[in-house]
Image 1 (cartoon, rainbow, N blue to C red):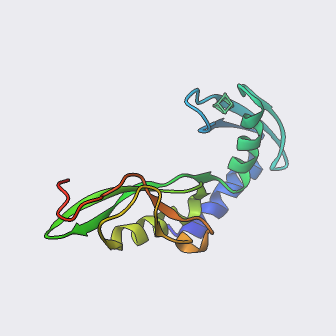
Image 2 (spheres, protein in one colour; image 1 turned 45 degrees about the horizontal axis):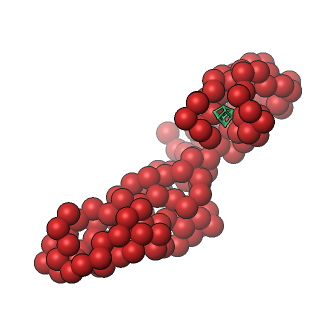
Length: 142
Ligand code: SF4
C-alpha cells in the first residue's frame, strides 16, 4: 500500500473514532494516553504524565513524526564499517521508508566526526542525518 494511501486511511480512522490510544515517545515513561476526539479534532487527553503529552497527542493524530536511527557504510582505507547515524530531529512518519532507502544507499569515505552532517535535508524534510560517533583513523577497526 502506498504511503499516501496509508496516511489517508489513518486520517479516516481518526475521524471515525471518538477515542484513540496514543503512546507518548517523548521520554522513557512512555505514557499511554486516551485521546478523545470530536469530528476528528482533539477534544481532550487523559493519562498524560506532563504537558508535553497533549502536544505529542495533537501531533500524532495530524502529522506523526519520529527520529530515525540507522547505519551508513563508511570506507576507511582498505576497511569498511557501519557508522551509526540518526536524524537530528524527528521527521514525518510518511517519509520514513524513503529516508531509510536514501540512508541505505549512502556510502561515505572516512574519517568522520561525531555530529557531522552525513546527509543534509533528507527527503526535503529540512532535517539532516548526523553521525552518532567518530571514525578518526584511516584503516579504522570497526
Ligand atoms: S506525557 Fe510527559 S511524562 Fe509521559 S511520556 Fe510523554 S513526555 Fe514523558
